[in-house]
Length: 254
Length: 266
Image (tube, rainbow over all chains, first blue to last red):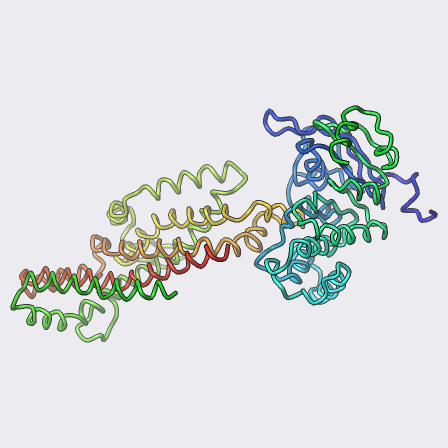
């Protein structure tokens, strides 16, 4: 690999250092550190309630942190306090949710074009063209005038991915995006994510799809009780886990 | 809609029949003459003028007052509702307090208060604004209704799943933008039936404005009774009741229908 995005030396695109976060008395993150290089595909695995989704929500500033630092590109996320200050970050970091969270009162195409036009102030005609191309990319050509409620779960999730891409982000955060899907629809969504990963989009995935993590990730992080217990390339992590908690977890899910 | 149409037909016929029966019970053989008298006074009761030449009093005044009060309360109630869900406690706390004060004020008391709180006229920007009884009535009714609408707004906004806020925020939308572009358009369907019920309540409440001296239907009714004789009082008040029923019942039916539709769509 000669492309600079794939060189290991360049500074990481995302870097979390010693991040702490509590909800009241409930400590969810107890000193999380992780880094993701530009173009990297990272999977976060771990038991439910271990803080995986919270990590994602801290990266794009949906949740503020109590301690530590988060850097995304040139942004020091923990210093951005208002929604207004967070707009440029959210332009760079898009997110896809477990429950799709599409806007049900808008058509598929409008779901894609709303934010680029209303938030980023881009020209509607250009955004529309880009949105149609993105719908083709997620294999939903012809569905632009449908409402989200008329689509299957897998189709809605692909619209949500296209909506994230319409912001032209550098990073996409995927929060258990196949967890709410019927089994037969999981692969159509994973295929789209696989394509993105291959094209060099920086992806951070919280997932329960171990096989998929093994296939696409260049690094896997295992979280438990709010800390990163172990991390490494998927081959090592899945085949030769060292931490007993990871071993027990893998025995249960594999 | 069919079930509601049936209910509407039954309700209208039923109430008309009951009121007619009451009329006959009270007036017996005289009923025909009383009905004739009511027919003669109908223009005055409906429009405040004996020949429908103007619509400044009577039932028309109740409608005008209710529409203005509702429009003012809709704007003020939305603003208060936004204040009640603000993230800043400095905005939220006073908004919630104000809402509770207004919502727990008896309407009649607020209307009486308007008589003394609002001056006869004020001078602002070089013009003199005078507070006519109708304006006092509109403001007096708009105040408690503002609180009701603020609550309806808050309830509607909270009925929209939080995932909508989260995804809109992750797309870079700010709070007020999210309300305007994402949440309120979805909340409208939850709010509409409640807003219509609020309006129906407000309309019934316009019968109280007689205390401000506004020339509403009740004030006209009293004038008519004074001139035609107390003998007609029962008939006239039954007639006024009937008019209120005719105005509010369709709203109630439409509200039910909308509620059903929202339930089906979910």
